[in-house]
Length: 384
Image (cartoon, rainbow, N blue to C red; front, side):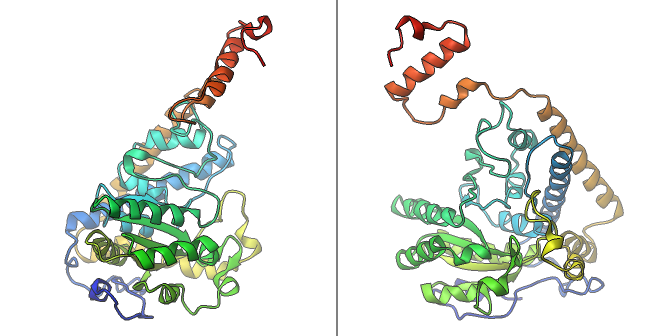
């Protein structure tokens, strides 16, 4: 396996799908040893992260179905995307996700309690309950808030990348968008700018086959989505997005190019959303169960486990332990978060401005006075 074509300034565009693991579950892998650049510990860490993402998603779905949280978005079937890319990121790199990359926070060791606080929107939620669940954000992990508006994160990502370039800050920016989002105007604007100004950004197209209910074939006439890079002068690569090792290797080279000043890269990660688009969706209305079953056989977690077993890096005891630890930790964090109070109403004035304007400060003081039973506004202290 060679990924070196990504490292040239103007590499040829290949339609082949980069993969390390074979599709045949019995074959496991075409390699007899870990690939160069990834140690046995790296590979085990990738797998543990994938299991934790799946365990987190299991829990949030159960919480939503039991009415304890209002909404959730899972990444079931796409765990190799987050775990693979995170294996290639440096601590100072920035992440501009769309709403299915929350697993990257787990990979970056953000406490489970903090993530659960967001799902419940309690007083420990960094967003203070203002965001709907699935719009995670965490400055300490350099993980920018997700947005429901399609494609806007790419504009922000390229802007952040250019800021880093101007500051001579040797970091890379990882930006994510779904297959449907590649038809948005912001995708075009972001890639045009990135290509011209050589922004240190890697744009990952997470092609999970459906833009909510619309299949790729009905929203784009391009043979493959990574071919769109040609119009922007970007090098591009198409990767098996269910192969966490291939994702990690391709990401490492592309992010390395970005940090070294060689500009942007577009990577299409071909995967499949095994579950619904969100907890509000019923995928049985628009896709065939046979198709889902076919992709379920390529489940990235099963493929990674077999790969590790083939390399003698994993066994049944390790498998039992990793799932038990993940589910225990997730359930404990959920139980803790559920007991935390909701944010106080006064927090609505926090984190709106760096310095609170006088008019808003007046509203805050009036509100606090009324909350405390001291309605001084009626006495003329707070003029209208």
